[in-house]
Image (tube, rainbow, N blue to C red; front, side, top):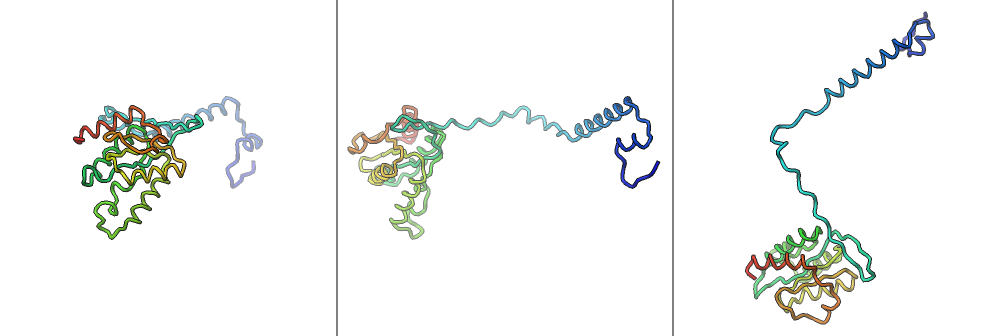
Length: 211
């Protein structure tokens, strides 16, 4: 038998005169497989601490509400712009808007694009902002959204009415609910009414905040 530097394969060993019976080959194969199983078993993760078994799994993500177009087609939106009153009863109340946004995000499963409820440009204008920056920010956020939700809390919600017109111009599905002042504009007829579950979510927030 000639010796080679590289490790000979099973075929070469057999052809060079080694007498491997079928039984021995099968035994070798089984031995190799059993070793692999042992190695894999050693690499399996250890069980976690006992308190992990009692922890509840995280809740599933909320189902996203569907939007129906004028043609009757339905699709699932992901984001909405929230238009409402900046001033309520004569003073800034963005805390109400933030609470309403949280409630509507939970109800619809959509994410809100509106920055005006937290923007320093809108809140007190402490960073040298101008009305132009405020208006461009609002229109940018509105255009980036799939859907527009409008909840005027005053009859003279002038900014929300401008945003209603922009929503029509960009062909956005536009939903409207007037929980406090029912009198609106003729353009309200072009909006879609809030579903009852959305109205209940809005009414619950306003009642909790004393409005």
